[in-house]
Length: 54
Image (tube, rainbow, N blue to C red; front, side, top):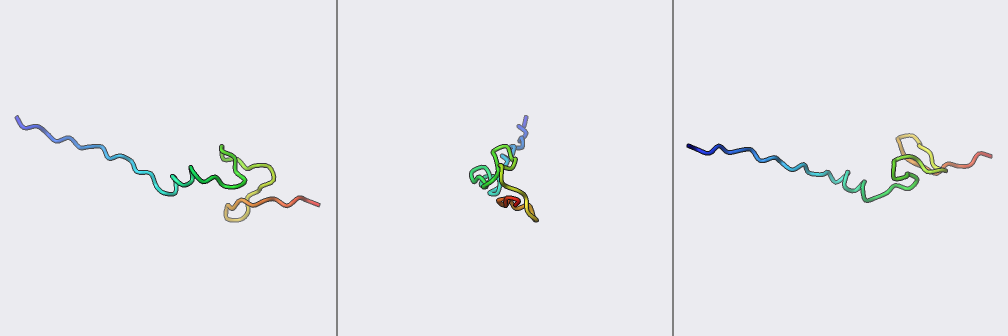
């Protein structure tokens, strides 16, 4: 009898973007992904400090 070769499962690699996003915390965002008080979304999805209304 000849032994059959089984395919080895490829380990999923993590992308640099995902790895860095876990380490680097954006200013104005809580750990759960919600905005902190005093911050808002600008055009393009950027997070900026909100100016107080006068």
